[in-house]
Image 1 (spheres, one colour):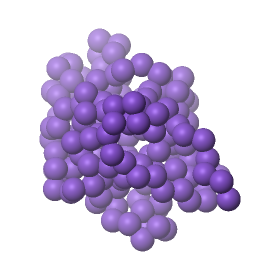
Image 2 (image 1 turned 30 degrees about the vertical axis):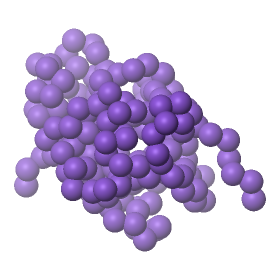
Image 3 (image 1 turned 180 degrees about the horizontal axis):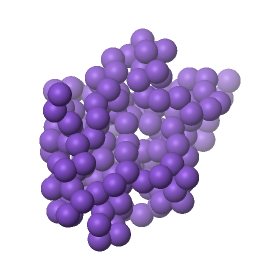
Image 4 (image 1 turned 60 degrees about the vertical axis):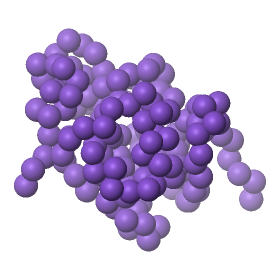
Length: 160
């Protein structure tokens, strides 16, 4: 079977000469990052999801965090220097990002929205993110991710 065409995320990583590897798997419908990690025998702690939010100002933000974690909206707002942020409704994900739900990644969205990566990523030499379409993952270092997105490393997780 031939490899699928490259996604925007892969093209950006190539343009910036940032190292990454791709992993392809069968997937025809949305499955959350935890289920995908478990299905593929990967660590859900090393698998990161992209959550899109809108701020009180009307600006959009991408928050990237461990698949098992819950986003702390107050911490997210503080990171974005907003009064408050709210999760983007699912029906708006593709319009805002250019990616479908389950294939959304902070690399190569329609516009260069501010990106925040949870500090838990620093514990790994490699993190796993969506590759920009269903059935595609990108494995890369947290530093490569931050370089590709001009992202900021910060605390985003809700405390237990």
